[in-house]
Image (cartoon, rainbow, N blue to C red; front, side, top):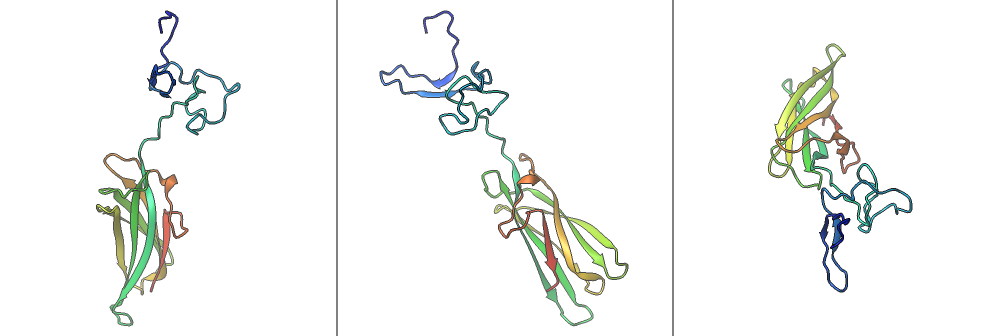
Length: 193
């Protein structure tokens, strides 16, 4: 380091121990970031992370990696229904969906506002009808949106579609939606019981 031409690569902790062990990860702002070439560079760094991770290869055994910012997505979408007063003139059925919101580490997200569209076919007109509903997730990351329907006016099947999820700090990443039941985490069909 006594060399006047030396440029500090800004590694985390260069130890001057005899065994030469130290933390050779690059720090933010290192002049070695994105200035290397792919000539002879392995496809992964010594941590197993893909190279390059920025605008170019890093001039180091370590590829400086900026993890993606935390985000949220639908982690489970469960449609369900129930009937009250079956067979009576005042019969109604409830079409509902329970939405579970997860962060990028699959932890539940509280206080996320879920917007979902409910679409059905009108028995009167044969036309598609859509209504929009919202709910706010609990500490457990879930909320329920529902609507009571008249079977004389609505066909026996409806579709819930999550159209947006809003949160004070986490962006919504709909491409990450998934459903352990095999759905896409965005749309679920609910049948009249």
